[in-house]
Image (cartoon, rainbow, N blue to C red; front, top):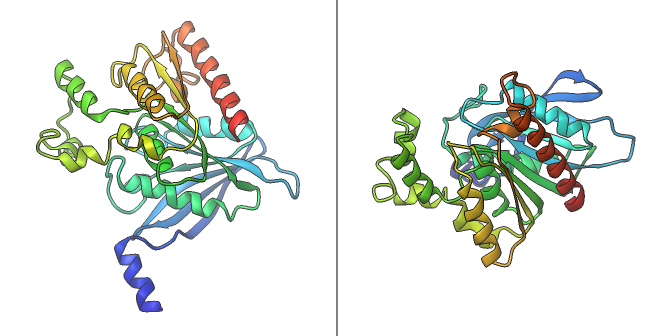
Length: 292
């Protein structure tokens, strides 16, 4: 039996395991803890936010996946606290290769497994009701959330903010607009494009997993986003509707990329973008209340 377990672990299919649970702080009544947990062969980190909870009460859970590939930003931490204060147990994964996690950045590949492993462990948190589980994500985290939801039928709702949903049309947009990166991570992930790396693109295409997403999806998208054009939200909505799924798209005319997480805390945000960001938060919290 031990040999079989080690073999499965090497294959990367062993169950989740909590390796370390550290208390970090108490912030406005919200307990903040840092987890290190096993995902495949890696020890990966994340932050757990638990709001004040009466004995015997279990709160709905949101796994809130951050943008980019540089770990949990100050603003994402503050946004996670905001979600927790709204009455949710929140987990913000750092993903492999970030914030001291083992492994390397894979861009919406192994990171999806990191989210799925966290969802298994959250079932052991006394205050958490994982029968009421939502995934939310911003940019990179939005794509991770959709891909993870397609592999976990227990997910009750997904919130995606300014995420790449049709990777092929996004790649074309990057090339047309001169925004295609030439950094090591981009080259390693995408090569010279879909023709040279067909499998890399296929596994990161959210539209390809729409048939397996069995819960309502809310899309929050800024129309001034020049990193992920707002048409990406419409591509997902069209695919979801064609598949008979529920997808609500909210477009914000004055919002840039990153607005949901960053606009509340930055000083150089326009009044219109700040107002629309607050509306997006109200919409997200109402969507979560309705579906959890």
